[in-house]
Image 1: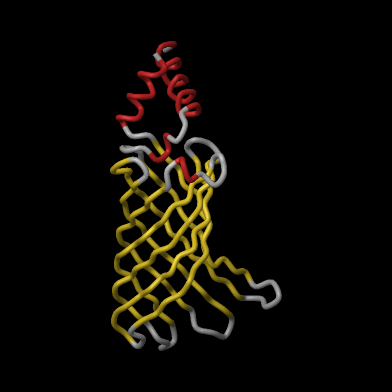
Image 2: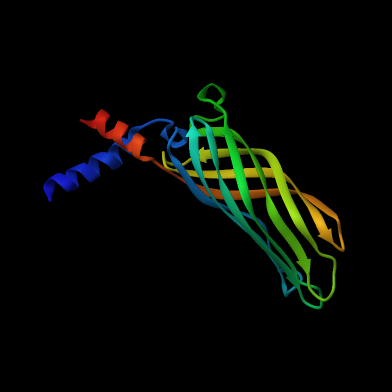
Length: 193
């Protein structure tokens, strides 16, 4: 029991002390971004929000590939409800430590491609088809495994329906958790011993 407790404690200490271990090959990224959160205070019965859960795997240092889901809703009293949805692949590239903006921050670029749609209730316009986006972001690592981020992206949706193409510029904020892969955990344990 003492050995397993010591082993577990050693892993957490080593993870806390390792620098830039978040974006190394073999690590995993899990989190979500929130955008367009609006609760009508001056006009009651207005609500909108968009959430995008993400997961990725670092195929090499500073480069992650993975997937995303997207769900959004916008509703108001005496108005149509707009529902957004999507899923697909994502890619991220983080700048190296030579481009650090803050001591614990990194710039990154994100691009996505997948399938999605926007449907409007009550017979309004809708589009379903290919969903894509790209833009820059900034992540600040609160700890070595938790990052707070801001991301501004151009979003496009091309497809079928009453509207062939829709686009927007979106600012979102997120929380990402960076988990070590097996090889990183083995390396950290080797450094602790």
